[in-house]
Length: 253
Length: 305
Image 1 (cartoon, rainbow over the protein chains, first blue to last red):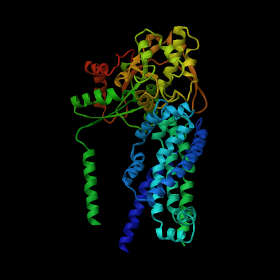
Image 2 (tube, helix red, strand yellow; image 1 turned 120 degrees about the vertical axis):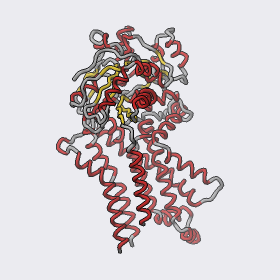
Image 3 (tube, chains in turn green, red; image 1 turned 90 degrees about the horizontal axis):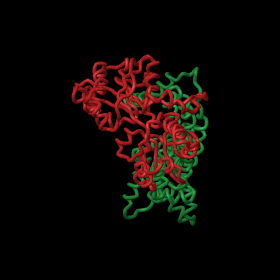
Image 4 (tube, rainbow over the protein chains, first blue to last red; image 1 turned 45 degrees about the horizontal axis):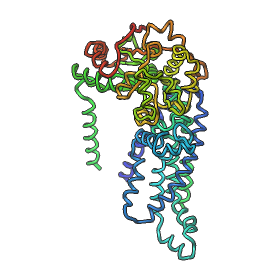
């Protein structure tokens, strides 16, 4: 009983610590004079629209890779593991520079793409590109853990009952790994939406909320940060909260 | 459990111990473009001579000024380019007189990896008009955001003066496009690294920062390089353009000569060292270091509130 209380106290302490800067935000926001700066609404739509596109790309590309890593053993798998980790552990500024070097207008990938009409510098595509690199590893690692948590026997039973691997994936694996997959999606969403370092280098335009926060700070000062920051929380939080609630309800039978 | 607690307590006390070093700390907030001369040259030299711990922090001049004015940043000395940011902090009552400590000028920096590098080199040697190279098809020119960065404004003002000086009426429009041209505008760290990596051909630059980064550049006459306060009233003032402020109101961008000013903040925690640092910046030793990093001598008078 005593140790239980100690753990609860520690948990409370951690929560208070995490909440501290946001309590400060609540306190220091000038509520009466709060108003958007020029271009804030546009930044809001840029963030929502392009982050959703980035998320679709991350899920489409990341799911097969996560599945492959979870279900197959092969030589040199550690190298693939390391490659998934690299964008995750690169400092965002460095990641941005690396993207600029390769996807820039004279880069070895960027040059042929530009000739084909796809400019990956300061364009919506560049914005999405930066977000994909910033968020994909988070999704891949969560999805992989989720797939690994599905007992193989259940999939094998499905296969032995004459279902195709595709059907088994949708009827058995996907529902059983839904908790982990939605956690991965939530994490990727939050990461992509809030990404500053990579985007600042690759796509100063179009300006989403993180870069616009920086511009507002430079341009007007701290007061212009608050309204946009509150808006950011309002659009960033619902998806992870809903995904978390939905999947938790599923697991509590 | 108990053991973990003691370990944590021990670790905490060690961290606290290192933070409270015995040397007094001098905090200098400076214009983002001064990183090299401050953190590699002036800061360490002063720290060594005066037995203080130097802490430098660089950021865009206007952003820095607004953070200091709102008391969100605390520092001892404030060093920025142009009088504008100084006035913001003076109006907030946090700064007395600011002394000119160095100056610089606008140049066109180019990438040694550019396919046009040879043409740029000829322009730098005076064999070609520099603007004809920039006007060529497919040249990628980079600059910073005029709404957040003085350099972003300066390159536009410079091109406007060049139009008059060379009598080339469409020069600014051809080279720069619209004022907020997404194809050309980058954040400052992005701009310099892209230039070094050869992902843009040329960019606006300050002579000082360009020399610090060992990039080749084209020098421009005083009439357009914005360095000479004496040319401000009669000639530089002919350039100007309108920007929309974040509150939707218009703002006039005008030339502010490229002089660096330093001042001791009124809420400095270490005012003695701060005053000594400003004196050091103006001393022979300080000026030698400035020159070594590509800066020119201070120009004009002190700015008083």
